[in-house]
Image 1: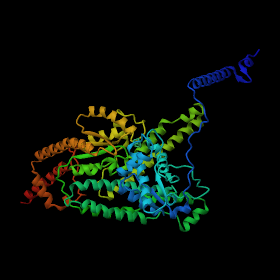
Image 2 (image 1 turned 90 degrees about the horizontal axis):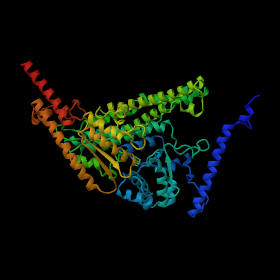
Image 3 (image 1 turned 90 degrees about the vertical axis):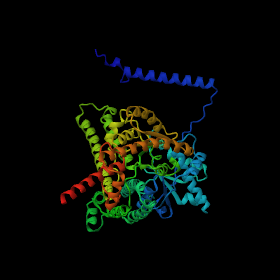
Image 4 (image 1 turned 120 degrees about the vertical axis):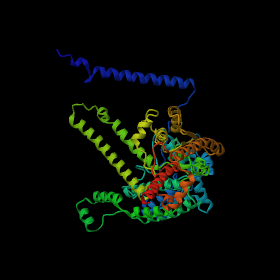
Length: 593
Ligand code: SF4
C-alpha cells in the first residue's frame, strides 16, 4: 500500500502545510500582542499614509528655449566648462554662485534639521539664488516656470541620497513650491516616449559633461601647481581667466557628431543608423583633435608665466569628503587660498578619482554578486545552460566596465599631455583598494568610502606630499567612520602629518589656526629636505637660482625636472635636477678647454 496520500494534504506535502500554519499562528499571536500593547499605551491606530515622491511638472523640449538649467557644487572652472558643454547641445544653462555662509544659514532655516554641512550649503545656495531672482523683479511663478535645477542623485547610506528631497523641501518652505529638480540618474517621471524630454541625458550629454569634468580637473591642478611659484603676483589667475574663456568658447562651439549624408541615409534604410552613430560619437571622442588644439594653445599661454621653483614650500594634499574637498569658498573655510597665503603648495583632488572609484566599486559589486541570481531562482548547479549564461553575463559586465575604465583614463591622460604633462595622473584604484582595505572595508560604501584612508597612505607613502589635510563636513557619517580608521593609520605610519578638519558654516578662525600649527611642522620638514639636498649636491641656493636665471626654459612651468624617490618638495627636486645640469655644463666646459 502506498503511503504518499498520508504525507500530503490537498496535494501539498504535509510538512509544508505544518510550516504554513505555524507561520500563521506566529503572525496571529504577534497581531494580538501588538493590539494589547497599543491598548495599554492608549495608541489609536489611524490610517497609514506613506510618503510618496510628489509628481513633478515635467521639463519638456518645447520649454527648452525659455528655461534655464541651473547647476552647481563644483569649482568655477568645472562649472564654466559644463555650462559650455550644455550650451553646445542647445541648452540655456547657468552655474549657481559659489555657496557662502548666507546660503548655509538659509539651508538651515528651510531644510531639515540634522543634515550634513554640504546639504545646508548647496540646498541653501539654490534658495538664495531663487531669492536673488525675486529681488531682481521676477515673480515666484516666473522663477518656477523658467528655471530648473539639475543635480546628481544617488542611493546609499549617506545623505547624498536625500539631496533631491532636501532641495524640494527647502524650496517649498521658502515659497518656491513646484520648482523642478532634475536628477542625473532620473528614470521615469518624464515618459520620454510620450513627450520629448527637455533635458536629454543621452551620449552627447554624458560625453560633454565628461570632457568638462576632465578638463576642469586638469586645468585646476595646473593652476594650483603654478601659482605658488609665479614671479609676477596675480599672473596665474589672469592667465587662468583668459584660458578658461578660450576653453569655454571651444567647447561651446563644438557640435555633437552626427551621421549625415549618403552613408547615413543608407544605414538608416538598413536600420543600422543608431548603432553606427553611437560608434561614430565614441570614435570622434577618442580621436578628434578639436579640443586638444585649444588645450595646446592654453598650455602655451600657461607656459609663458615665469616661475621660480627654488621657493621652499610644503606640499599639502587635500582629501576628505567630495564636496568639502572640491568647493572653493566658505564651505571649506576658503582653505585653498588660506594655505597658499600661508606659503603652502596645494594638491587639489580631481573629480576623476571619484568617477574611477564608482567604476571600481561597480566592478567589485559585479564580482561579489556573481551567481547570486542562480541561487535566488533556485537554479540547479547542473543546469549548465543557465549557469553558463549567468557567468557570461557577469563577464560581459566586467569587460564593459574595464573598457570604460581604460577609455576614461586614456582621455584623462590625453588632456594631461595636451596641457604640458604637469598635472597629476589619477591614483590607481586597485592600489588604493590594497592600501585602504586593511583599515576600512572597501565594500563599505557611502561618501568617499575607503578613499579617504587610502589616499592618506598613498600620497604620504609615495613621497607626493609633506602633509595631508582632510576636509570633513560636520554631520558626515562616512567621514566620521574614516576618522576612526585614520587613528590606526597614523599609528602605523608614524612619519605622516595628517590633519582632519571638520568644516562647518562657522569656526573659520579655529580651523585656520589648527591648520597653521600642522603646516608649521610640514614647513620644517620641507626646509630640512632642502637643506639635505643642498648638502648632498654641494650647491648653494644662490648658485641654483643664478643658473636658472641664465636658462630661461628652467623658469617655464612646463619644464620637466623629475621627481626623486624620497624627495617630496618641488624646490628640492628642482635643485637636484639643476645640480646635475650644472655639473654636466661644467664637465662640458672642461672637455672643450
Ligand atoms: S558624504 Fe557626508 S557630507 Fe557628503 S553627502 Fe554624504 S553624509 Fe553628507
